[in-house]
Structure formats: structure tokens, C-alpha cells
Image 1 (spheres, one colour):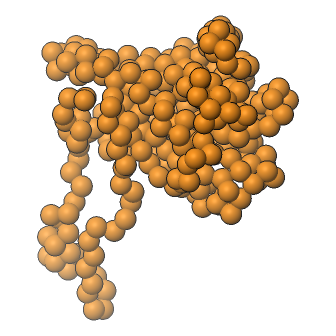
Image 2 (cartoon, one colour; image 1 turned 60 degrees about the vertical axis):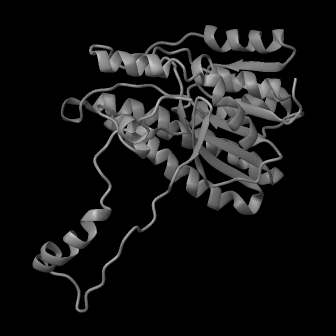
Length: 303
């Protein structure tokens, strides 16, 4: 057992399986007491089951760690507060939150329904805010704390058929950035991780073509356990990192760029439509970001 998180209390949402389970196990292995939150829903968010969260708690306890299960939904203000209350009521404090809970309802943008949009935004974006907001009161009072929010290259770079998921995940990046700034004076840190990891969510990727099958086989080599150490470091007392976006892909760790101006052009008297067409766009076009998906940008095999 490690000791980097000894006497710390960590909430991990969506921890009943996949990446969340791997993070919860790692936090416990580093000495943290862990609130294993999971509603036990299906991949699309339907249903509930206390079994997955309790199974991870049992696994942690069997390894000599300390954990408690929680099945409240991240997607409600009051239920999110109950998740944080479970940590405080059970262990006396809360030191970190890992916002990992999520669902997918993939569909092409032009056929996506209102419910498919709202349900994904509710869990990913609203859920990350609600749980973070509930924990902030404790973090602010104790002048310490850390957040790790799971984002995705679907939002950072692009993907097909994931308008809801990408919008939520890019919204989480903005949320994390503002949390980092608002909470810095209280000694609280906030960072994002965009994981490449095989899980229930990536298991939903189609395998109808040889190319899709090859992609899935590569994804299977990217174990969620590879992501967990970075999450543990970012919430540990040895870290002073805040306001950053990382990505983990097997044994690779990336620091991702953030939005900054890449090119500018000045024109005395301002711009009209003709000048924009004739002068501005031709000058800026070489610096345009191509319309790509994640596999176009990260095109090499996992290492």
C-alpha cells in the first residue's frame, strides 16, 4: 500500500466499473479512504443497481483499504450533496473529488433527440458542477482540496456522432479552469484528464468494418489502470499543479493545449465583408484547425 494519500478522503463518481473503479482502487492503494459512488445504471443512464459500487468497496476492503459505497445520482443538486455528505459523515472530511460519472447516447447531430442531449449534459456537465460545488464549501473552509475532472478528446479534438458528449466534455474543461482560478486563494486545485481507456463507454464503438475492429483492438490495450496514477498524483499533497489538461494513453502522458490566439491581423478603420474575404481569411487560413477526429491527430499505436 502506498502512502501519498494517507489520511485523505476521496470521492470518485462513476466508480462501479471501468476507469472509475481503477481510480478508486488506486486511491485506496495510496492510503485514501474512498467514497465509491455509482448509481449502477446502464450505459445509456437507465436503471440503477447498488451492486457495482458495493463490489468495488468489497474489493478495496479485501486489499486492506477503507471505502464506503454511495448510489446517489450526480445529476441532481440535492443528490450530489448527499454524495459529499457521505464522505463527511463517514470519514469526517473530504479532500478530493474525481468527477468520472458519465453516460453515452451517441447519435448523429441531425437525428439527436432532446432527451439524448439533455441526459448526457445532465450527468457529465451538471453532475461535475453539482458534486464540485458541494465539495467546495468544505474545501474553502479547510483551505485545501483537489478536483480531477474526466474530459475527452471527443470535445478537445473531435469525434463523429457525439455532439452531446463532446459539448459536455468541453464544458467540463471550462468548468475546471474557472474552479482553478476561483479556488486558488483557498489552496484548492482543479485539473482535467482526457483518458484513452477501454471501458463500457468505448465498448460501444461500432465494429462493423475492418478499420473499426482494428481501432477497438488497439483500445483494448489501453487499460484504465494506466490512467489512475495521474489522478492519484493530481489530488495528492505532493502536487501543486492546477488549471491543466492532461491525457493518458497506455504508457504515454500528454499535456494538452488550451485555447489561445494563434494568429492576428490588424486593419486601420476596421473590417468590412470584402476586406475579410480578400485579405483576412487568406492570411489566417494556413493557421486554421483542420476538421479532424481524435484518431487523425493521435494516429500512432499505443505504446
